[in-house]
Length: 86
Image 1 (tube, rainbow, N blue to C red):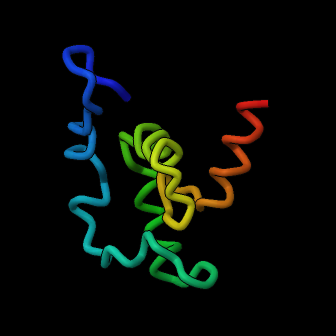
Image 2 (cartoon, rainbow, N blue to C red):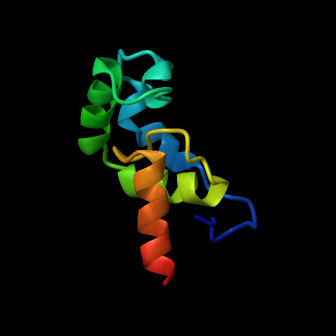
């Protein structure tokens, strides 16, 4: 997402992210092997987040396929990105 006033990426949306105030450890958004209970709670937090679309967009832009973003795993986002670009 580009700011209209500069060529830098506008990341102010992050201040509204539900994960910022969540009590889950940051590792919950970085599943290593399947979805454990902490990761499932992270997905629930993302599902209620007002900026989940921006988060998904950033994950695609940065090609962060190892994280949960916007309540979607990296493999799910990769499939979604592929289908949107076909």
